[in-house]
Image (cartoon, rainbow, N blue to C red; front, top):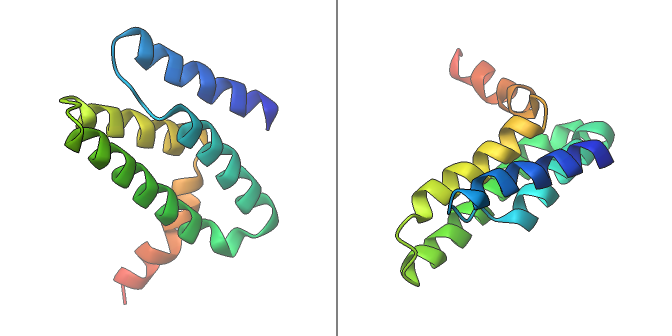
Length: 103
């Protein structure tokens, strides 16, 4: 978990060096939260991912309202970090949703 936390910290730094402002603590915390949820309570992974998406959208919407003109790109970087660095939790999380759509 420490390695993935460090990797997500570096991921955010890559974007910050180019002038973007992804949410560092939401990205790092979200990756670690999803890893923990998947390890100890896998049924809650879709709910945790949904909560993280809601938090990221809310945070970046507030930043946009305060004048950040690249808030949408920052949101994409934040969500990309959470989903990509969590090592495939979205495929696990979205599997029940995709199965329900086939019914």
